[in-house]
Image 1 (tube, rainbow, N blue to C red):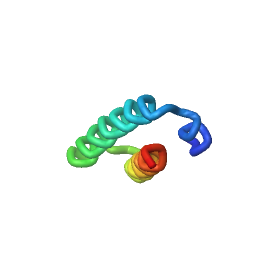
Image 2 (cartoon, rainbow, N blue to C red; image 1 turned 135 degrees about the horizontal axis):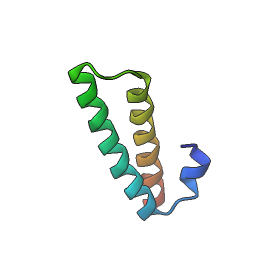
Image 3 (cartoon, rainbow, N blue to C red; image 1 turned 90 degrees about the vertical axis):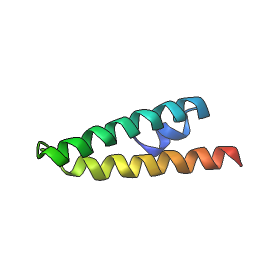
Amino acid sequence: MELKELRSKSAAELNTHLTDLHKERFALRMQQATGQLAKSHEVRRVRREIARTKMLLDQNQK
């Protein structure tokens, strides 16, 4: 998701999105562990999106 789209979301929506990203990251890790992960770049994309979301949540709290 683009940073512009993330900035337009409320804190509750960001928390929901963060939970979804953690679930997606877990699923990708399980696929990687079992050798079923076809798109290894997805792990990096999800990890970076988690960081972006956390950054925005921290900025909104201040």
